[in-house]
Image (tube, helix red, strand yellow):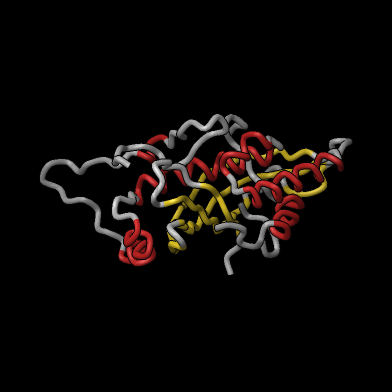
Length: 223
């Protein structure tokens, strides 16, 4: 992913920084992949169950007498290709699920949990993530991370190829991460320094499938 991988408790939280961040940016920088309407988050957890995205996944109706927030013209323009193939696409619901998936992937990678990553990633991306986890294990390195929070998640592009819809999202997050060697010595990162991270992730699904789940098919750094 370019020059570095840019994908308060450890409870559901985790992230990538320092040496591991730089290594994964190098490994994962290339694109690798290609209903009845009901409310549901668009991602699955490691057991294949749909991921709850908390309050971010709920589209609240405005109070009576008030109007809904204005539509973001840039986002709507970015979504035009996908909406042509899937008019029922719900951007707010998708972003709720994408935020949950982002945190799940970052957490699972930091923990070295390949089984949690498997259902969320394309085969090619999973192979790259798993390989990086294995390399870290061979060096007996550990990553201690704190996910401070997401500052933003913005849809910047969509496309459809042979009915496979792709949506690209820019994530802006804040994290703290420290990588330690087998003796517990810090080899990268700073325990008291918050790093601002920008990741560009692309998700895909078959627009004609009843399966609502999206898969991460590509990661990159902003230009």
